[in-house]
Length: 261
Image (cartoon, rainbow, N blue to C red; front, side, top):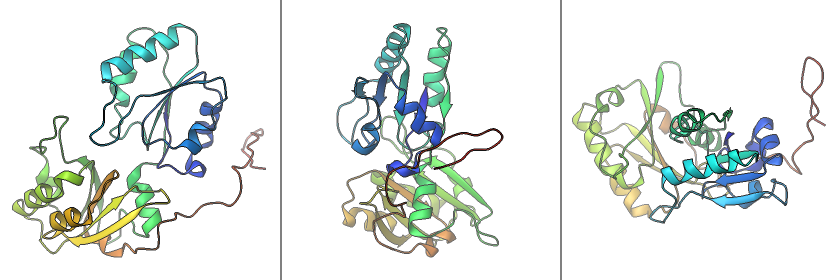
């Protein structure tokens, strides 16, 4: 099962993701999945960290695929737990294709992606009538760290909100490429570090200053860049995201509808 852990707060897990974690016999998790979420797995569950923090060492994708297959063939309930949504830059397609080609049934459980978490936490929309008719999720860099070559023309559209994942070290290059394609240097832009977490941080700029501002801010966690008119609506409301008080609610499905206790 490929499960989205969301941006980090346990109360932003979907109910389905929570049930998957609670029922896991083997949990393969990314480095950005926090201890509060890992603690939801049963005590006998086998826990294996597969992901990495920036610059660190991690398992290669081929190794992760083989490990998932071996555990599944042993009859274990395997949960591959990923930050955010597994279908948004989470290699969900690669892992699903690998397992299904070898006879392993795969279910995917969506999660809250970092762009949605950042928008909710810092009070800006991703689309907005009259200003942002579309939103584009993209990465700024390829797997070898170089800047993505194509697609920048679409991001230069003034009515597009462009969200760049994994773009901390490419902020200046990305901004230069967008301006070369015609996006105005005065376009509002923000960088969000650790979106959705208690230690989230917002840095505000415009497109012409984005690279320098990100570099000066010395951001260390995962960084999301948001470029477009909606970024001007972002407010630094403090690090802590809105959160329900107390433990996660008990969920008891009923006939025809769900119910929380």
